[in-house]
Length: 287
Image 1 (cartoon, rainbow, N blue to C red):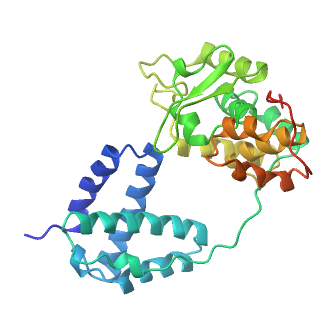
Image 2 (image 1 turned 90 degrees about the vertical axis):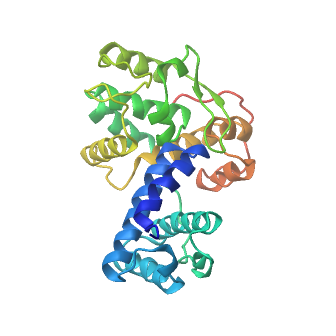
Image 3 (image 1 turned 180 degrees about the vertical axis):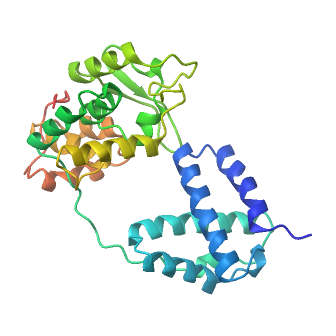
């Protein structure tokens, strides 16, 4: 009996895990592919890999766009689809990888957003009573870590003067300076952290590692309460970069902290920060 896309999906997820893809990537791929499989079954009456043609995948792309998914979100979902179909061909489930014929939607370049000092101070004020989320906000503002890296942080990763982001996917391990504001916020949270066997720093009330989606939802909620609803958690990371550039911190120090693979990626923020030339300070600024 031929294997269906639904029965192959768990095998593909195991393959991603063996390839050491990040948990957030695997979670997103699973969700995206379940969405594709549902579309193919209900809209195209197809469940077997060899039944799927380029036109079916183009239909999936186009219906996402019609459902108001952004071009960027649609393109990300299409990346999951293309990775899945490469896997199907490599494993002999299909003779041809028809996803190669499917083009990505055109993405208009967006300008990164960042909070002004008044805005991130307003966020601090409203989040102050939620010690856990306050610590997360402070960590991102003071170190520039990604939301997925926050969720993956372990208690042992936080030292007196630095925080260690463990290696994952294509990212090598990196050590980021931990200033007084971030350290105090983490220490305050540790005093009220629920008892848990989990090595993760941030846990739920039940002691389970705090998921990225829960962190994002909580910060979105506080953004709205602080009357800065047009920002997201990712904009806190941009704020870290822009503020440090404005205060004269050199590109290498910032790039190393945020984990940019290329210095040119960090250089792009100079215009955003309205800095005519890179600074020379080799110590991160406290926001």
